Length: 385
Ligand code: LLP
Image (cartoon, rainbow, N blue to C red; front, side, top):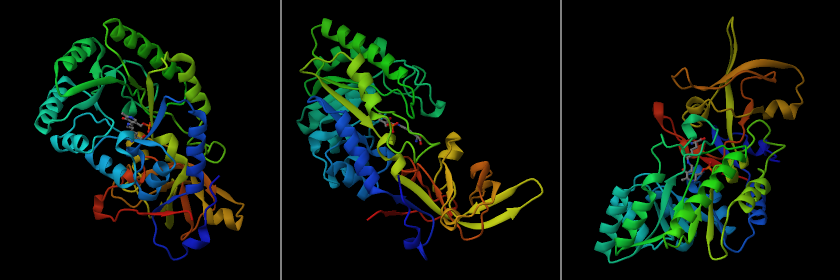
């Protein structure tokens, strides 16, 4: 559980992200404990948070990375990842990104269309290299999550449709600069029920069987990420249920001894170790509502505005002072948009100007999605000692 060093923040400008690196280390150790199989590899999905000390902690503990841009490949290398631990997915890769991946000889590119495959073959040819590729297959599995973070249905833009899988693999076989390594899947994010993963395993088993029946070896299987976290109870469930998650794959995925299995977890690794720390500017009273107006807005944490996401709000000053009286507030930011609301009608201790507020579970898709809309400064970060 994160203990906030609120006294150390006196006079520090808000808003900023605070990362509890102890909790992060414990989380990564738990992942390693639960995924202890010789042919299993966990790659951290850098898109969730690329803040340098966070990334270095994760890579330093031995996890590989999963990248979706050339920028993330570079950040992984700079933070100490070994090229052979880096995967590069991404729905449409630019030529310079493909070159960067090939120059650095990363483990594999996950390819999302025949058109992209042809472009990789051309670039690898020019560079006189062989590109190791996995094909991202859209398995048409419903992740039962928010529609904006579902990716594995055949109406989504991601991956190669199952009916096109065999012709695309056969095409790989004819390409001199492509080495077909296996299959990649990712069905969505913030998945809190393991049934979609069981369905994914069933689909993967079927597809691998189909390919191997054609005499083609599937060396690598990448099942993506997506494990969810508890936004309601960040203190009770500060480490997600990795045991249950990995058990599902152990139980339902048919893996040969010479096959490698890859996971790409983002949110579950970093969400609970990060909070957005903000200060109350004003408590505004109207006939209908009490507004707590904080100095962080949707530019610092866009998830509530974009996905109706909930982040638990804690008044750290009131907690420290032991204020007993409680009230219902809308906690809103200073951006000129009516969607700049963190929570509505939310019970907090009596709140005053100057109080320090934490928006919890914001380590994933928080700081990394910040923008400068309204010409605001980016939030920046502080890490625990
Ligand atoms: N692998 C691939 C191919 C992905 O597209 C993603 C996330 C991941 C792995 C990691 O998924 P995770 O374990 O973090 O669920 N901005 C949204 C989430 C978008 C997720 C995009 N893809 C949010 O704030 O909820």
